[in-house]
Image 1 (cartoon, rainbow, N blue to C red):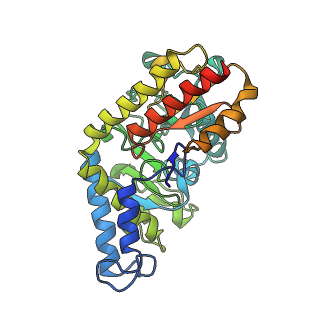
Image 2: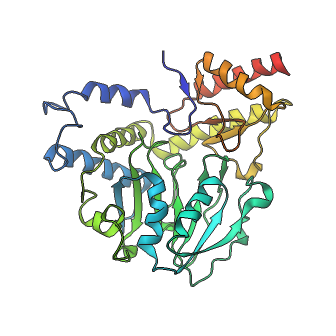
Length: 359
């Protein structure tokens, strides 16, 4: 029996995608072999890759002046890839710190550029994002980096800042494909696949073409956006199985109404869960309502001693992956595109029962 998987990533995937992949696992469409076995240079895999890119472009309405890359190393690899591709050694680069993943990006970038943290939400214990009119981006910075959604803290930007001539760069790993996104407002969008896109092992980088050609000579080829764009993301052997599965997920999103439909689904799920938390005297959410994530919902119980019993009982009830991140504790429900509203309703029902038994 499949459980409702609320893990933050690797996360639940659409059952239809898994069943499709299962049916094609040993023989992809009459080729006589699995996608895992075919050459990435073969006409079969080139068609898989091209279809995945075309669907990504269509769903996100990616303008032609942007390259779409399918790379290895996850979003964490791009913490280094961003400064190495966009800035000279020691050049200033602006960052916004809204939590754990922002901090990791800042630490990595500090090896390569002069990081200037122009906003840090430490005072709120990272339960907020900066006010939209408060960000002042120095004109001499190579780029402004922000994490669109903090997977661990459940904090999300409800707006896209206007950075003028300074390229806006974002880690969109845990929010990409959850709703429409105006790609034209960004210089670079990167996203690890293991949340809304597919399995782990692949990162998508969407980069405006006028930002290519700035990579430092010492940048490793696997991180060099310009070289990868010229090679159609196949400068080396790519993660072919992950790329294929991302393509299936993109097809699934198309078949289920595209990003507008995903937005409606995700809004309904988040409102259901936050509504249950806010209506309770037992559960609480630490994030300022205006900055609450649609995708990752942390919540607390009055007594931390109840956290392990909650997670264990939830697991027995078929609700998996609800433990909060080890750095913050509590509980967290990640409700990405593939999580049906029935799963969220099952969680809410379980929470009600647990409260009645332990409140």
